Every structure is written in C-alpha cells, then in structure tokens.
Length: 361
Image 1 (cartoon, one colour):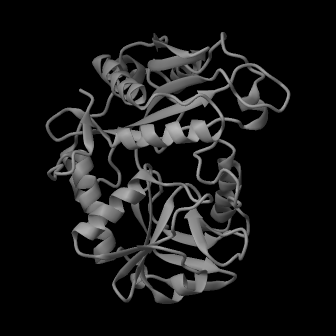
Image 2 (cartoon, one colour):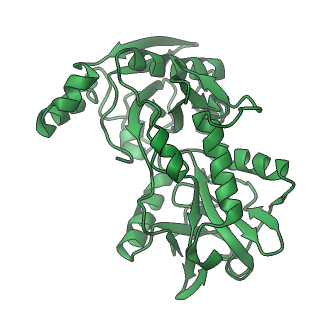
Image 3 (spheres, rainbow, N blue to C red):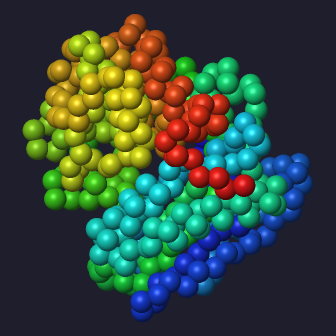
C-alpha cells in the first residue's frame, strides 16, 4: 500500500484570522469502512477523490504557486491491546510550530496540534476507518505492518504575487499506510543534486524542499536503487540526508554517527529517538560531519530513519561508480536491534518507559 490518496472521511481544519484560530472537524462523504472496501476500484476512487475537494479554499495562492507551506508526518499505530497510539506527537507539534515561524506564518499552537491529531484519529476510528493489530506483523519486525498516517499541513490564503502567508489554514488528514520501501532492494546511491543550501529552508519541513528529493529519488529508482543520498552544497563531500529521511552510519569502531543538525538538515523525530535508544544501550553516538569517503570505508552498518522509513537498513552505497557494501548486504545486528526496539515501543510489544506513545482510542 505505502502512501495512497485514500484519506479517511474525518479531517481537522483551522483558519487563522487576526489573532485567533477558528477550528472545525469536517466529515466528508463516506460509506462504512466495510462497504468501501467492497466497492469496485473505480467507484471507491471517485468517493475518495471527493474527500480531497474543498470549494471554499482558493486554488491560486502562495502554496500552489510558490510552494510556500510546510507539513508534518506522524503515525497512529495499532496496539496489541486493541487501541491506537500516536508516536511522539508533541515533537511533531514543536517542529511544526518552528517550521511555520521560520516561514513567517503565525505559528500553530502545539497543544492544539496534538489535540487535533488525536481527535481526528479517534473520530475516524469510531467510524471504522482504522487498522487492527495482527500477530503476523511480528514475524518481520513490523516492517510490513499497517498504521494510520497523519498529515498536518498548511495552506495559504489567496494570492498570486510572491509574498508570505499571513492567514493560513492548518489541515490534519489521515490515510492508511504500510511499508514505505518496497522489499528486495535496499541499495542507495549518492545524488548529484543539492537538497538544501546554507541559509535556506533545509531545517524546515517545507513543501518546496521535497521537489529536489522527488526528482533525485526518481533518478535513483530509474538506475535501480531504493534510495538516494545527498551531500552538502558547499564542499560536496559531507553526507547530509536521504531523499526523505535522516541517515546513520554504525562504524567499525563501534561509534554511531549521524550528520550534525544545522540549517540544511531536518531534525527528525525518529532520528532523535534512535539516538536516545542507542545511548541507552551504551553506544557512543556522535552528531558530526561525516564525509562520503569515511562513510563508505569505515561503516559496518548503515540505515535511514524517518516516520515512514522507521529504521530501514541500507545494503550498499554507491558514489561515482564506487560501491561500498555494508555487513555483506544483510541487516546488521545493531540495525536490527534499533529497528526492533523502535517498532516494539510503537506497536506496544515492548514497554513504553519513555512515555513516547499517546493514546488516540
């Protein structure tokens, strides 16, 4: 399934006007979850498309014309006890606040963000639009497990000249999602493109940032790779990110390295969680610059991290025709530990001693 535009019927919308946010929950046309599943594909697609239409929102605005907007991605995960719980929504709320502020928008209150995500998931679940825990997911460490993907995003007021957004909408929608990366290929290649430049918006989860990422990932896929990796814009030698994920290198020395945060790297919520889990295990974790030569020559295991990716192993990395294979092309012991610890907490098979999960049902 991965990502698909088959959003659940209930969504949240807030509009900024003056100094206040006007909030509402909208219930778009739908049948029961079971009836929709049984519908012919063409009919179901029409129904799902109708949920994505909003006649009272301007088509021509600073978002559609210039990509001036930001978004978040987080998940509500089926729990072994039958409920749904959201992974660290407070951290997404804080990043969303900073992103909007960085784009000179009035920032959305963090507590409202969390409440909107929880309530939107809950209302959809009450209508039957939700996944349920399956024991079989444990066999592959939840790599193919289902979850609810929550997408909060901004949408600008009408405008055609280059300008900032002063009266945005904030929307929260939910869609079903499964594994992000397809199985069978976990090779990566260094892209010749530049994702972000100093003094730019790389640290913001801005819509415009993902144009280059989409192009680079498409080029990588055409060349037979699962993922692409970006180098820095200035020296063209320091590793920064994947197409839509942070990256980690577990070195032969036992040090876990991930590129240090700055104005060109997105501060991932999964990234910070992995750093905490690794340190809990006594692993030396360094947030520092790592050049492509060190990454390829000294790495024992490599993986990427993100809301969609979780902790996904990278079997090899190719740069300018030179290929480095990590751990014989197989998932390493440390990568597996991080993946299993993270997924176990998220799906409720391991204790949530850190209080990361927020119940939605």
